[in-house]
Image (cartoon, rainbow, N blue to C red; front, top):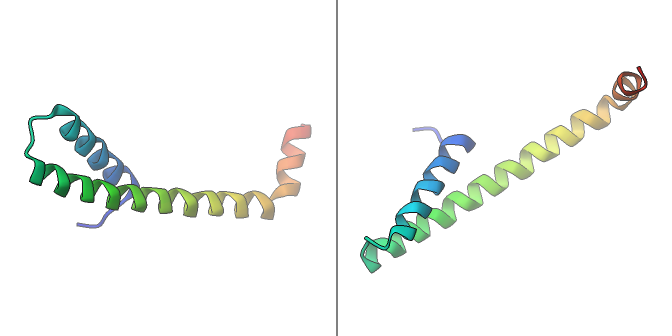
Length: 71
């Protein structure tokens, strides 16, 4: 299954709920925690990548954006 930001974020949220529930063994908690860290890193890296893309697009089109803002 190919990973994407949205599905990874949902999985991370589910792990957080499971860890908060306290109905989970210590061993399972550690496994979930490790998976959560992996998902957090992935999501954080994706956000940085997207931010860079948006910044690049904005910089490349700054004149157009100025024209739009000035009406």
